[in-house]
Image (cartoon, rainbow, N blue to C red):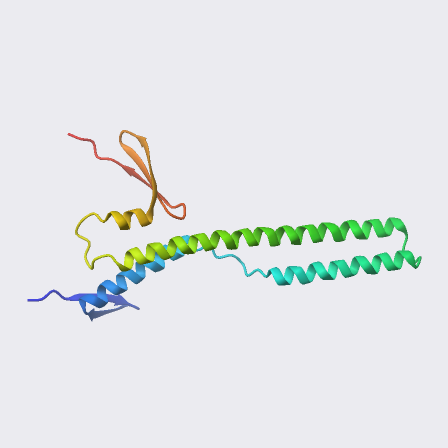
Length: 167
């Protein structure tokens, strides 16, 4: 009698081939790892911020023109310029921060790709320790005490594990 494989999806149980079962399982692992690593931020546009900075620069030019035409005082000009400079600085800092996040995400994506490749090359049924897979997923292991360790997975996820005491 051959072994049967079932996959539960949308509240229904489906009979699937062994190959499909392990393919689905790998896909689920990949999705879970990606979800753990994926830090979904609000949509951000450097171009949009640059457009705002351009508009602020235009406002400053207008204020300078109005001051030279005598329409506003020097104190009013100083106040307008200070406000514009503060907003512009904030937008530039946001751009810089976002650029750094993009670079970090690139590194995370490369690491995620390595993990997915390791998962894809796993045998259908892991029956023994697989050093390559463990190295792809585990960042480090901290020994806290004689009977406790902390396992750090990539992406900053950690698990505390109490060790069984030897009899």
